[in-house]
Image (cartoon, rainbow, N blue to C red):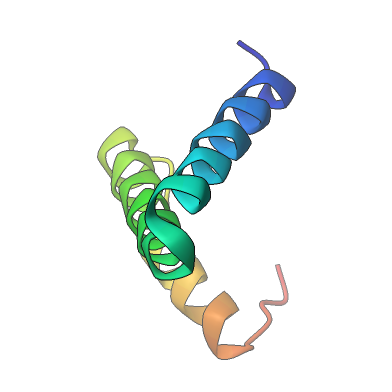
Length: 63
């Protein structure tokens, strides 16, 4: 499955949740999906927590 199909599936899930649960339910589901994606990447070993923290704080690396 490529990223386009994956994006379409995620978009459909979020659209369905917006229709079913109103705005706050949609927002909560989007946050949970983001947390799940981060935990999944960390479990796969594909997430560098230090670079994520630096990116969120606005720091840039020289490498």
